[in-house]
Image (cartoon, rainbow, N blue to C red; front, side, top):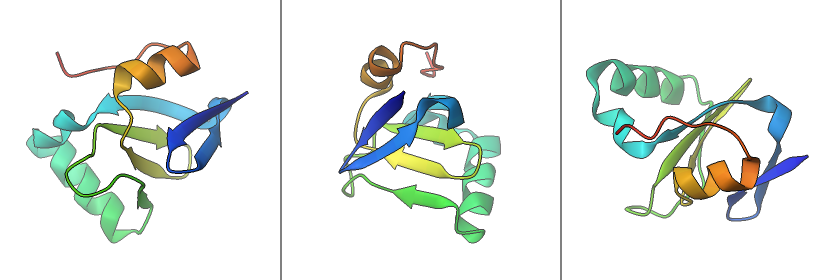
Length: 84
């Protein structure tokens, strides 16, 4: 099965490690993690500026999606951490 992340990006569900609310990036540890991932060029932003809603971690890439965690959760049928 596959999961549509927005903007014509579809990934295999088996590759998903976590789906996080974009607000988790406010944490110093998560911010550092994302900065490191960006420096290694494994982050793919598929959301327009200011429209980022979720972060999807896969086995080899990180996607910043315009689709909310709850919607992705429903599509994937899996548990997610939404930061609340």
